[in-house]
Length: 329
Image 1 (cartoon, rainbow, N blue to C red):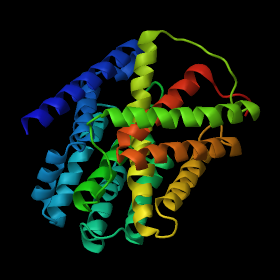
Image 2: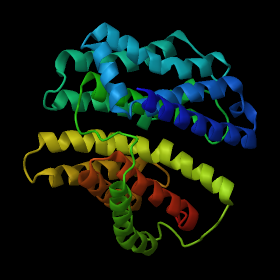
Image 3: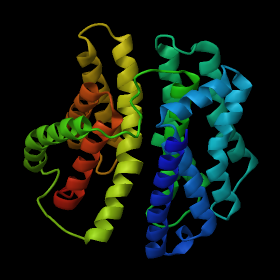
Image 4: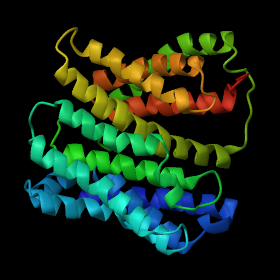
């Protein structure tokens, strides 16, 4: 257990340090010891759930006991409560009840109606929808009141990702999610091939439809590094957990026609449609996101690792923001 703890601690300290530097640069309530403490506690389960030995320990502690599993799930709320009590929002009984239900209902439903290790069913998809919709609709963002580039969204999105992982990896014991912090050469190789494949098709399509323009810009190595870390850890990896690790993973176990490729196409279309409420929200974004989803899904299918698809996803976003900003709406 010693090695995972060292890696988890090192990753948590490194990312919290980057967040602290970011807060210092931006000023305001982001550079606050309570906020940094909350961020560090938010990162611990983020990284811990990526190690099999930690997951096995949590499964053993839960032992399919619904009350114990729910209490373990409530620990994910600690960072958000720290932010609320440190003047990063306003806690009301209604908001506390909403957060408590958001944690408890998925755990209790899965523990009762979707036995650990069984084949995925419609119950799993309904629970996943309950976990995804509040984040997609930005419901919890209003709970916290943090300034500067909406870190409240980061808090809400990360909470949703961690809860989804806890529900399906620990409570549901779903295999093949691929959430592990063990980067291999294959992950980078396959992820790079997927990246090139998307760029060959996606860049001409995006330029041809006027969705993006060729306008390279460089903000400097420091800003670029901070932006890249944010994109990977708080955009690419959480979305890959949802759309590849959970949706694609479950669909390919449920759909028998066409093998995994039917699930690949269907999950990519869902991924594309989910971008219709992201600015600039139009059909071009949905089509390009669907094409990207096919490449991300292929990388995940080939390696079984979310790091491979997250690498491709992050690089697409980084290149887009650095070289191809959005064109006309």
